[in-house]
Length: 71
Image (cartoon, one colour):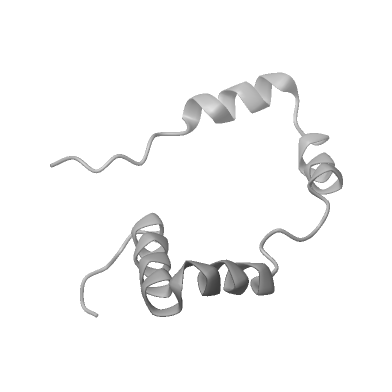
């Protein structure tokens, strides 16, 4: 593939292919098998949130630019 895709575009395309090839049930089973919903989110988020002040978190949120494709 010669066209460079952004990460969101690549995920969208890959997900569409998986759904098409595996069906929705197979796709869900695949995602579960990949362990994408594993771990303890509450504990994991403490490891990065405890390092930031509320001001730093707000600044990071302000710095996020929406990934919107323009025509």
